[in-house]
Structure formats: structure tokens, C-alpha cells
Length: 189
Image 1 (tube, rainbow, N blue to C red):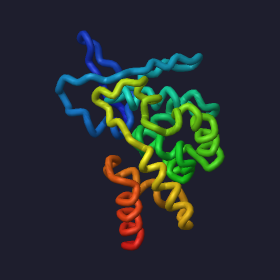
Image 2: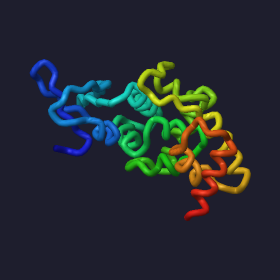
Image 3: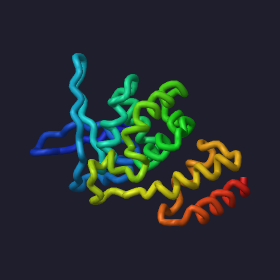
């Protein structure tokens, strides 16, 4: 099997479905599953993209609206980062996290941030990715995380340095707890 490819059988017909690595991890062979799909039709190809969550699909659609981000780059970004991590990277201006994906250079990462920052609705949640639905998606209270990123940048840390640490923390923690935990993580390095 090719990486990022899943064959989905529907009505006795197998469809080649391009997926992210995050979606691949949720799939089990020969079991019934649901994928949220996007059909990309171009002059030279017709490709089906599948995602395990509606949030991931909507994040993919939003990313591909950016000039220079095609479906393959969108899949690469979402294979490297979760939808919530993409939202956090965009909101905090963390281009380094986005450049971890193959095919995304510094200029493209900055363009993604510039074009999508306003669409995140003040970075209150990933509602813009989930279409306002919180069902089966991780609603992300980024308010405290955003405040923690701001406070840590005042202390001299780069957003790209602290964002990956903060994105793994429980978003219900207070700003002070987030800052203390991040400083402890940074101190271990």
C-alpha cells in the first residue's frame, strides 16, 4: 500500500482516497469506517481526498484556498500537524511549525498565516474549521494558550519555540499553569 492512500469500498467499488497520516492512524483494515471526502477535479486529474474528522476536512479546504497551496500540500501540512495545531500556528504566527511539512517553505508558510489569520475569528476556537459544530471534534480553548504565547514572547521566547509545547497541553489549564509548565519543559532542554 502507498503512503497516504486508502482504498475505500463503497457499493462494491474500490475508490483510491488520498488521506493524511493522521487519518491513516485511525483506519483499520477491513473494517467499516466513515471518511469525510473532498473531490478535486482539475484538467489533468480527478482526486478524492478523505479525512477522519469534519474538522480536518474543513481545515484542508481552508488551507487550499491559499494561493500556492494545492491539495497535496494541504495533505502534507495535515499529515505533519493536527487541525488544532494548524489553527494555533496560524493564530500565533508560527511559520516554523508549518514549514515542517514537505513542500512548505518559509514564504508559503507566511502567506498561509497572512491569508488565514483573519478567518480564525479571533482565535477563540477552531469553529472556523468545524463550521461551528463541536460534535466529535476537539474544541480548542485557545484563549488561554494565546495569552500564554503572548506572555512567553514578552519574556523573550519565540512563538515557534513555545507553540509546539503549548499545543500538547490541556487547554483548560490557567494561563499561569500553562506558562509554568512550558517553562519547565523548556528548562529540561
